Amino acid sequence: MRYSYINNLECPKCSKQYSAEEIQQLCSCGSPLLARYDLQSLKNDIHKEDLQSRENSLWRYHEVLPVLNEKNVKTLGEGMTPLLALERAGEELQLYKLYLKDEGLVPTGSFKARGAAVGVSKAMELGVKELAMPTNGNAGAAWSLYSAKAGIRAHVVMPLDAPEITRKEVSISGGKLYLVDGVISDAGKITAQLIKENGYFDASTLKEPYRIEGKKTMGYEIAEQFGWELPDVILYPTGGGVGLIGIYKAFLEMQELGWINGPFPRLVAVQAEGCAPIVKAYVEGKKESDFWDNSETKAFGINVPKALGDFLVLEAIYETKGCAIAVSEEEITNAQQFIAKSEGQFICPEGAATVAAADKLRESGWIGTEERVVCLNTGVGIKYPDTVDYKARYMEKIHH
Ligand SMILES: *Cc1c(COP(=O)(O)O)cnc(C)c1O
Ligand SMILES: [Zn+2]
Image 1 (cartoon, protein in one colour):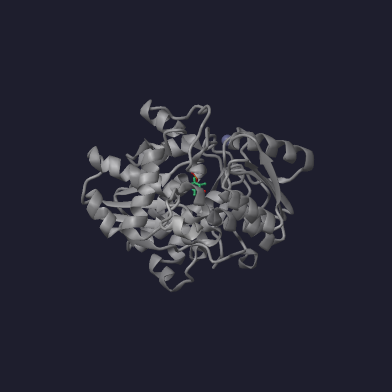
Image 2 (image 1 turned 90 degrees about the vertical axis):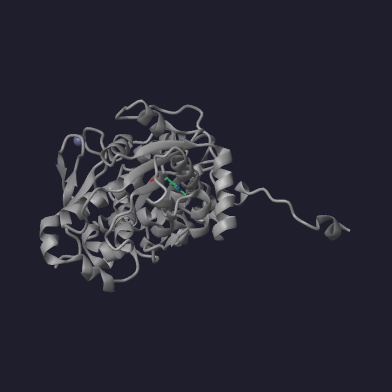
């Protein structure tokens, strides 16, 4: 049996096919490319029950990942994160089947490790020596760390305001760090220039086809962790939307494999009020989003004014009868405190946004109190110490 069942890459816009055995970036029409697998053969070769005895990482799904040779897998143990029932919080929110998938426990402290593990492993397999990317912090940190393991040089361009810890993660792992006074789209322009001048591999979100393959494993894990009975709603903090597109892609693949039945979970794209291009497009019933000017939010991972894969995000929302919703900065902070106080979990602001959104959607009746709801906590709260205000007790005494 093959380690990977990848066939080729396909353009979701114009259906053009590309080889997965050579370096590819975007389709000639400008669209991202998606990996396609020989699911019919795989369906005959393995059964979902065969997965049970496998290693507890995302590589348990290696047949539907693009790395051809197991030797090229660069792993730090990413994936198979806990799916936790939020009983106390759920009681309070009247969401009696509320779950949190905690991506704060993956290496590098954010779910970007999934995309980096698969993206970097495949890049190495294809002979990439140097790559470049813009980032809001976490992706750059993860790609720099995994690149170190793969012996690849990473050039990482990030906004000055990105969480400072992510600069240090790039720096300590030998990545080359570039700071930009602007947002991620400005970092994107610098990256394009670096690539043009030096011929680096372009590892920007969706400009290489394999980061999404790593992120889609969240969809496989959710299905497996629920005993192949999918939940009703999944809320995802949406920046570039790669995780949401990936989860939807996983559901389509699993359906074809006969691993799941019935309706898909309704996928909810959660954004911050200060950067909500997908929400705006959804409200207007559009298939693509417009650039969001002067975007701002403390949930830095979702500060993306215009996503390359916006049309795929919107398609996933429409096809699953999901929705898109924005939450305020205050709602994010309150939800972050609420989860820490009720569940003992210090989640990241992006993850907190999904809890705030679940609360609003339950209130409006869009989510029923008995529905099974999964919030994705995409990172660990301790990466963002500045989002928390505190008052120390006994400060005066210590002063004297
Ligand atoms: C990158 C990031 C997101 C958004 O992920 P996309 O797949 O780009 O939408 C959410 N949360 C955190 C913590 C992130 O780092
Ligand atoms: Zn195309």
